[in-house]
Image 1 (tube, rainbow, N blue to C red):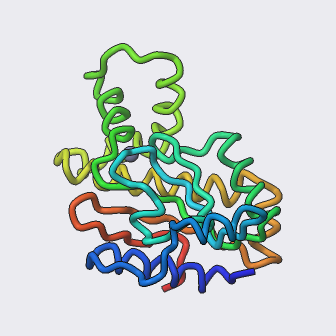
Image 2: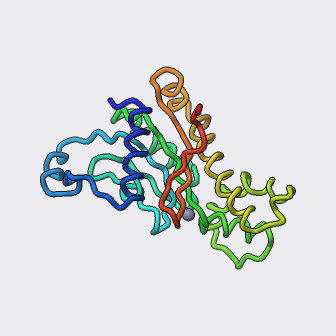
Image 3: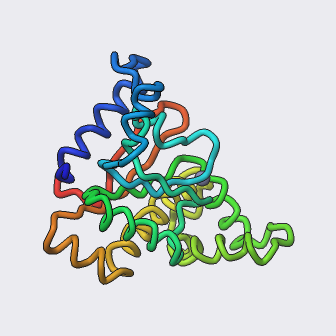
Length: 207
Ligand SMILES: [Zn+2]
């Protein structure tokens, strides 16, 4: 089992390689690695990320086959099936780090802000279910001075949504709460910058 802090270091190092455009020497996505992994896996981190085509978790963290257990959904929202997926990996594979990975200019957050500003088009009930999960974290920002600047508002809304998803995972599951208290499970929030490629961990860490 890889401790949460060590897993975090691996992700930071992998993101640094990605940002500097340098590859690891080993072939983490090759046939040999595939065959090694066919019978079993030990992913060292669980990533709950957005479905956005520009934020593939394995690539932005510089990882290969078998490294990450990834759940992707628009707006990196937390609904019961996402909690269940995190529980499954944490329990079955002993994975001890969970990262909620949001990103700058997230379309799901923009759609929610549009809806709150009543500029939105008619949404299907299914899309609405995503917006409804983003709304509680974003709505309070509209009554602050942040609402005066659309770019500033969007930046804060992205982070508020990441924080809410991480909190939801921390407190919406008895199993994850127990693993956090007794077995070293760590749930953190991070934002990926579409322009720089940098992942900034900003929620759930002491430092
Ligand atoms: Zn997104």
